[in-house]
Image (cartoon, rainbow, N blue to C red; front, side, top):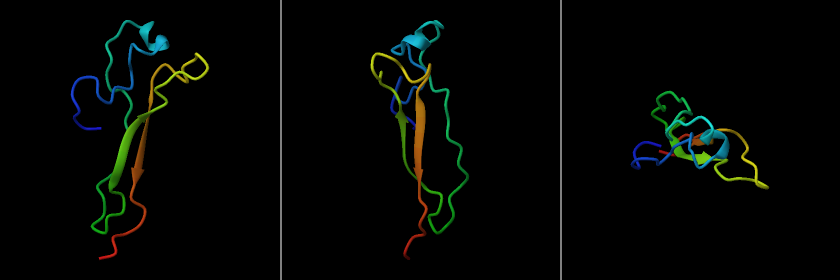
Length: 78
């Protein structure tokens, strides 16, 4: 989640009532670490997004949001 401007991709947010108790500004605190992809494309990051960033039945799943990344698991057909 590179770029996107202030607040984009934040996983610690005061919109989350659990995180708001800490009086800290919103920021990115969760990461997915991946090595460099192979020349075949294996391991290339396809999509990365913030998940679990909504209340469910008036409760937050955690005090911070999660990060989900999809990586290429099939080599290029070239």
